[in-house]
Image (tube, rainbow, N blue to C red):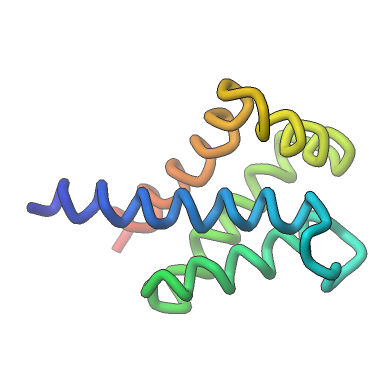
Length: 110
């Protein structure tokens, strides 16, 4: 039962994170800050918390993904891979794997 819950919840979080990535960096929403990492983080928090996660869990997931992205990419690389992920499944999977890893870490940490 826990695995089914995790799988369903992970899917919801995956789509929330993908929406944050694609929405914030594609310019579909007004920028809330000048840095796309910060913008991603803000939108991630909003979208993930709307999916029913407690705000502290949402913060942990979004903080984790943002820090991993910052550790792997500079801002130009991050924007480029997000753009590429719209048409390239391998790039999309590369990004979503970070969110999944963070979600698992946060979920099983508690």
